[in-house]
Structures are given as structure tokens and as C-alpha cells.
Image (cartoon, rainbow, N blue to C red; front, side, top):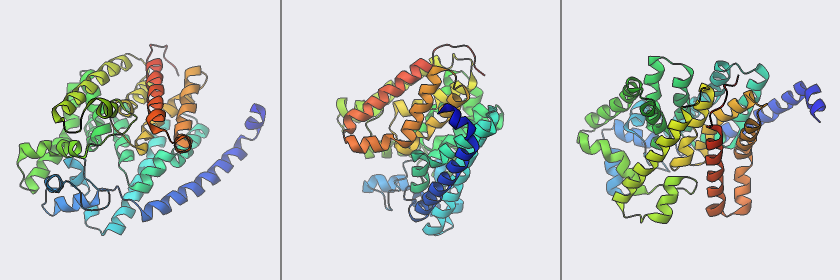
Amino acid sequence: MYNFLVKNKKNILYLLIFISLASFIDTIRKGLINGCDFQWQPAVLFWEGINHYEKFINNNKSDFLCQGGEYAHLLQVILYPFTLLKWEFARGFWLLTNIVFAISIPLIICKKYNLSSYKTIILLLIFLTCYPTRMTLNYGQQSLFVLFFLILPFIYKTKLSFLLSGFASVKYSTGYIIFLNYLVKRQFKNFLLATVPYFLGWIIYFSYTNSDLIVNFFEPLKWILIKNYTRDADIYSLIQIYLINEHQEILKYLAIIFVFVLNIFLLIRINRLSNNFLKMSLILICPLVFFPHSNYDYVLLFPLACYSLLNFNVLINKINFFFVIYFFYFSRLIKHLLNIDYIYQPILLIFIIVLLLINSQQRLKEN
């Protein structure tokens, strides 16, 4: 079988390209008629001078589709060009933006770490056709946007990349990791640079909507807590489900602090590694362990797939790679067949934690 695969490598690649293009075209078709998670309407409200956080908190609901606006102030600010368009055109242009991110992320990572052309094409096809990416494109989500800015400071160690990494802050549940990592590494200058986009977004938001600056600073978090966003595949959500009543707001804040402390200890362990590629891959998995996320956020597993394929001769990397492939293509199917999320999701969480701990062991530098 191995000899067959080697001898027919090009033919297999052509077949995969054909299948992937068909799948990708279908994803684009769905994205053009869906895009419900694209935060167009909260941005429209903001540019009309309306504080959408205050409005949604007072009404205890959002106004349009599933666009709840549970994101940082910055997102509403930078979406200004899309607010000039009607909804149908805006979601189409956001789909195009997401496609640019979906293509750029694999190419940037593979070029930086010198993966061969063959492996680069394979990884690109995997990323374009995996369920988290397709779901992001279909729903108009922001997970590719966040991942793009999360990888920048690992790929390009420049002041500009540290500054731009702050754009990942638009999504609290995943973007926080870059800021926490700067603090753990005591890179306080990089931390301050990364906070510039966030604070600029906040200043523009409260100024444009004539909101109280202090109240407005905490409104995104207040709105998130009111919506009680939880899943069943992360530590914070499990604490919420089994230990905290939904009305115990103070305990929710304490739970957040507790989870951050656990995350800090894991980041300290990861940052002892000498391989920058591996460190990036493991750091980006942390949000999947500690805070609520949906299936589209599992795009954060992709750098680990790239690292593992590059170092495929090591057993743990074989396990890493096939686990990511399983999650990208088969997890959703198995999840629906079993229909026991309350068991299946925690098992996956435990497996990811074990992988993180094993991979974060001190090892000789690879490749």
C-alpha cells in the first residue's frame, strides 16, 4: 500500500484537488445564502450612533438573525466598509474576506517553516475542506480572522506583527491567548502594543455612541455573561454546568479567574519548549481547553497538523496529525451517531489535554 501511494502520488494529489475544489465551491454556495453569524447588524447600529451592547442588554436579546454582537468594540469599528452595503452584498464580501484568510493561513505557515510544495498543497486542501473552515465560511464567522492575527507574532517577530496581533482580541474566548502569552513570557512591550487596537476600538466606540466610557468598557463581558454562553467541551463550561448556578454572577467571575490561572500554568510549561513552531501550535490549542467555543473555533488545531506533518517521523506527531484529521472530518459524524454529547465532548476535551501535556514535555529540537 505504501509503495502504491508513493508511485501514484501525483495522481492521488490531482484527485484530491478535484474533490477539494468541488467541496470548496459548494461551501462558497452555502456561504452566499447564509452568513448568519457575520456581525453586520451590530456594526450598522454602532455606525448609526447606537450602543448595541446597551440595547441588547436592556432588551435581553439581539435584533437580527444570530448576530448578538458578543465581541469587542473593535470589531464593530473595523466592519465599517461592510455597513455601507446591503446585507446580501455585505455577507458576500465577508465571505470573500474569509476565503482570503483560509488560503493565506496555510501558505504563510508552510512558507515560514519550509514545508515542501507537496505537503503545502495537502495541508491547504485539508484546511479548505475541513469542517471548521467550511462552517466558518458558511456561517460568516470570525474564527479565521482571529487565527490569522494569532499566528502573526510567531511567524514575523516585528513590532508591526505584535501590534496587529491585537486584532485577535475581537473574539474574547480565543483571542485572549495572545495577550496572556505575552504576560507569561514577560514581553510587556509586546503586550502593550497588542492592546493598542483594542483600546482604540473602545475609545472610538464609546465616543461615537456617547456612552459612559467605564460602563461601556465592561458591557461586552456583561452581555456575554447574560447570554450565559456555555458548551460542554471546555473547563469553564463544565464548571458552569456542574458547579455554578446561572444567577451566581460573582462565582462566574471567580471561575474565569480560576481558568486563567490554570491556563497560565500550562503556558509556562509550553514556553519551556525550544521549538517555536511547536510552541505556537500548542499555545493556540489552549482556548479550546479552557473557554467556550463552537466547532468553527477548531481551526486553531491546524498549526498542530502542519507541525506534525513536518515532523511525521515522531510517533507523537503521527498521533497529533491523525487526531486533527479525525476532528476535522469525522468527529461531527461520530458525535451525531452517538448522540451523547455530555460524554463524548468531555472525552475529546480530556484527549486534547493529554496531547497538550505530552507534547509540552521538554524534547530535543526537531527540524
